Amino acid sequence: MTRKRLIIEMGMGIDQHGQEPTVAASRAVRNAIAHNALPGVWEVAGLTDPNAMIVEVQVAVPYPELVREEEVLAVLPFGRKSLTVESGGMIVQGRAIPELNDKNDEMLIAIAAVTVLIEND
Image (cartoon, rainbow, N blue to C red; front, side, top):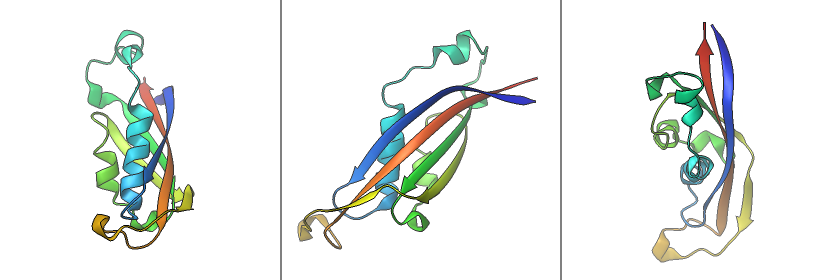
C-alpha cells in the first residue's frame, strides 16, 4: 500500500505557567487542527471510517523527554496516530507566580505539524 498526504496543518502552543512541555505540545496540536475540516477525506479519498486516516504528529518543544505522548495524541479525535517529539520550540523569560504552581520564570513554546494521510491499494 502507498500513503498519500492530504493535509499538513501547523500550530503553536504555549505553557505560560507550570513549565509543562506536554501542555505546550498539546496546545500546539490543538491549534494545528482547530480550524480545519476534512471533507476531502470522505468525498475525494472515499474513506468511510475516520479512524482509517493516518495522523502523524511532529512536535518541537523544550524538554522533549518530559512529554507524555498519550496526552498529546489524545487531542486528536480520530485516526491511527503517531507522535515524534524533538527538541525545539522556545523558552521565554516570564514571571513565576506561586499561586499558579510555577517552578521558575520559564514560558514554554511548542510548534507542531499534523499530517493526515490515507493508504491506497
